[in-house]
Image (tube, rainbow, N blue to C red; front, top):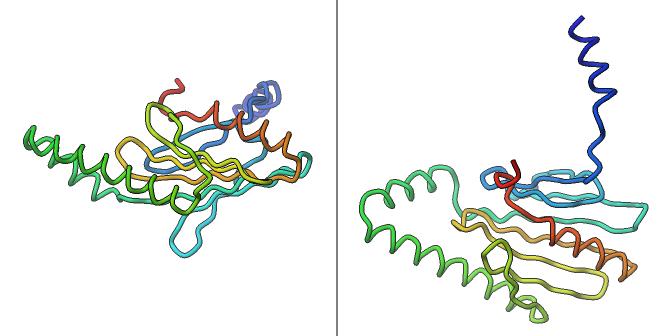
Length: 173
């Protein structure tokens, strides 16, 4: 009987039309994406990929992990020991994030800084490809989000929709 009720409920439940997708394990973000992201691992790194054949665009997301769970626990302990350690820790995080952004801009000289979720990020608008590079506030992970397409108008529209919708998953209650 319960299976029948669940089945009927699943049929009557409205389909999610806003096409929000999530990325990340340690720090989770969600954003608009027109196709279902496929998560895969290659050489110890996490990637997300989807191909929207209707609009002829691809989403390619690379996750760069800077800290693992043990690092996060150690850093939390260090922060709680004393106020001076917390200040040193925050300065180290800001310096590391700044270096990561500068290195990304060095490899992508046509990029520019933007403000994203209260932090700095880098956006690159190229021929048939737009990119976004950002890190979480504690520099646990960074993401490179690439949207590739042959039609510049469609590409720009989908990239801007993705950029505007990007948020921490925890903020969407």
